[in-house]
Image (cartoon, rainbow, N blue to C red; front, side, top):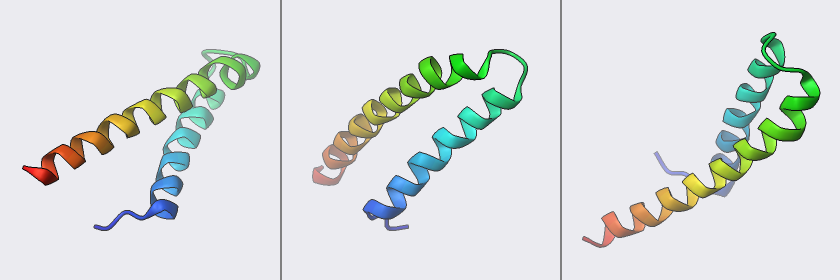
Length: 63
């Protein structure tokens, strides 16, 4: 499967949105806590993992 920028961005946003909506629906934390603390940390972690995965894929494709 080919991943171009729109497909990758849509998948990234969908995974983060599903996690945030699930946490909001669950009675674990308040919505303000999820939106101000959890969602930004999920975005940052996702971007870091995306960068690491991208570099690993570049490494694997050159070997």
